[in-house]
Image (tube, rainbow, N blue to C red):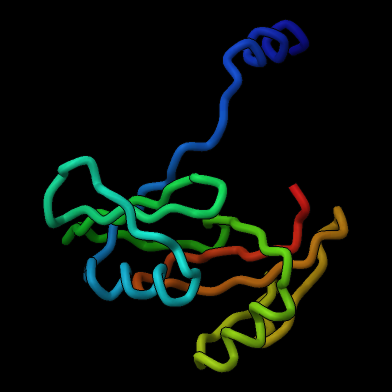
Amino acid sequence: MSITKSLSQDFNFKKDHDAILVKDLDKSAGFYAEIFGLEEIYNAGLGENFRWFQLNDKVQIHLIKSNEDFKPHKGVHLAINTDDLEGFMEFLRSKKVHFENWPGKANTTNTRPDGIKQIYIEDPDGYWIEVNDNKL
């Protein structure tokens, strides 16, 4: 294991993007722009079925319009952090956006074993997004 770890460190991996399939591209794009304040960026000329957004750390979320059947699951989720989780929860309440903790209790957080508080919300296609107060 130590040989594998030392070799992989030579590549300096960083997160680039997550890509998700969405049914209604405009509705999903509106959600990520309005709820998370993400900046929409150029989609590399991929056409009208692709919309790209960028977080403050330059990591991207690519929305891809699709008619494929997919079933999101809470255990497979995007995770982002904020410096103001309490303020974000108030914002969600003001927008009437449902959020819950990991066990599913509405309007509250839970604390992970590592001491990080978290909530979960669903996007328009049912993808779960963890928002936590981790200080990376």
